[in-house]
Image (cartoon, rainbow, N blue to C red):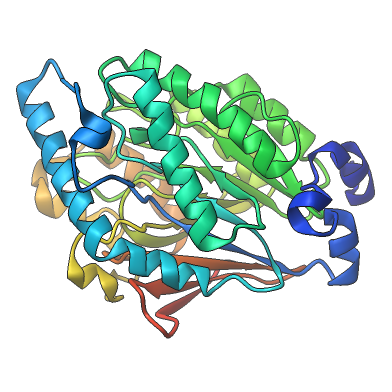
Length: 378
């Protein structure tokens, strides 16, 4: 399927003129296919008063509940002190070439007692970001694990889907029927995936619908490559501690490599760039965070800026993970194809620039007036 056919096929997915002020096709022709997207990473929106959204919350594991309640305090403090300034900074990144705003999942903290409370939580967050960032542009989010977490995860996940399919249908000007879906901007495809309930057949179908796209972006809360954490190295798309879904993981990797996909993700609360060559193509992954929990995260300082450093944090924290086993095997599988890798414990806002041959992201740590780092993706 060539690009013209792709556009015709996906015309129903083009962001509506009521949202954008011009149709995706017209915009692509007028502006040479160039546009930008303002992005927030994880936000963990919450209230200073834990009872506002977490009244009645319980967990059968007392230690886990205590840890979650510490997060309520963290979130309430950062949303009272730092995050409003971060959002205000992000709003300044919106300009006439911005076509939508994207948020990388964990929109809210979650940990709610009922579906009603959870929907109110989501609605308050969506309305806040919509109002303070770009009221006239679509605000798009992807399901994160916190967005689906509560007293009964199944009830909360259902509440998320019921609310968000309606809300995102309004934002995008087309019908969204699930938590994994596709939309396009001009000739580009954006494949949005729910990493907590991945289905290979659904993903394959979305990639098929994206045939002929100029660029294929995969928007997913979790990374698709193992990330450098002794506790959660396995928490990736189709990942688990036993790597028992390795065939599905590799099948999706081949799909992404066949399109030279750019992955936009969050989850790790780091700012990270990873570029991998293999399976006949390349995959570039940009990980983003807006969880400004500590003051020092408002500045950009790279901790690692070399492929040789990939996996070093995991082994430093738990030397036994450097011994033969599932964790080391997983990192060793990807390490030979890794040409670029960097990460920093920094939170802020991001601006994605897209053109025919140029794709890059400008990062603004905290509420920095000046750009902190430019990441050249393509």
